[in-house]
Image (cartoon, helix red, strand yellow):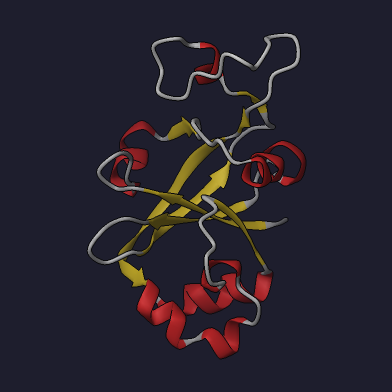
Length: 151
């Protein structure tokens, strides 16, 4: 089993949104490294730290899991979508996604500041790297346990 951190803006799609629908395609990712994580590395059952970004208090709001193998992101073919990609052919799609399934909401958000305060215990944690803006990040088992211990 592997672990991941997936960022979302809560005014667009929050842990509460995921709790309501139960399972959701993680569509709209338009970064090749993040796409490759979903397309090549994520497996059904992998754990996800559900992270709220671009908010007053960013942090991990709950847990989810990878619910299916990767498949082509349909928004790339939808001309009405903000994520439409005219250069992506249907027979060789450029963008892929996985579905994420709700596990649980934390009693409180584990804040980015709390995570930064544990940087020495987290090692080379991708979330804390300067300039990192990826929406899908790998998490080690030790980092996963450390963040869960902050809840």
